Length: 240
Image 1 (cartoon, rainbow, N blue to C red):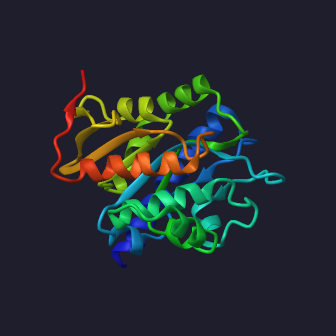
Image 2 (cartoon, one colour):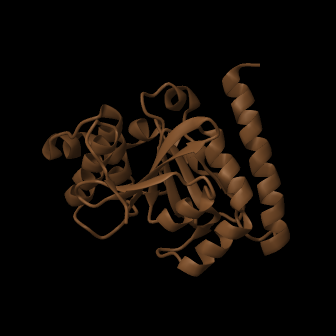
């Protein structure tokens, strides 16, 4: 058995146990949506293993059973119309490139590259059942508390170098207690913390959800600039 096959087996066992417990608590009528590493070979061989911690996936219309977000991305997600996933794809491209790309160049390429660029990352939704256009913050928090152990186990399995908290900074901060590490702010006031997942260093960065209603270029260069500063030798400010 290859390392990637063993990885998928471990991941599948985690999801199976999680889905059973979710069904016990919420009832079998609720979807369980798998997520995670879109394409392991690319992710684990990337120069900076990047994980986006999201809130919940949009419920798939007409689908009563669970489904797999990563599989949908690999297949081009025809059901989604990509609904802002191009934003996440652009973030991915420049984070992994280690530099900011000219906006016109980036936007002209992204339409044909969304699925390809997203194959390099891990996507983890805190809540594994589908939601609507907006998320109930209290419901999301309650879910994160009920399933904190499997959520922590899932993130740890992926061994990320960077976690971008997409509107989930409070959950990410709580998830890794008591070893939350050192808090900081970049020169442009983006919050983050440096900590350990097992024996591996990791950086968590608090940011907006990729569907936030702000100009896409502002969000893009704000995040890319922060990541560049964090992984360079520039001095970070302690968070007070």
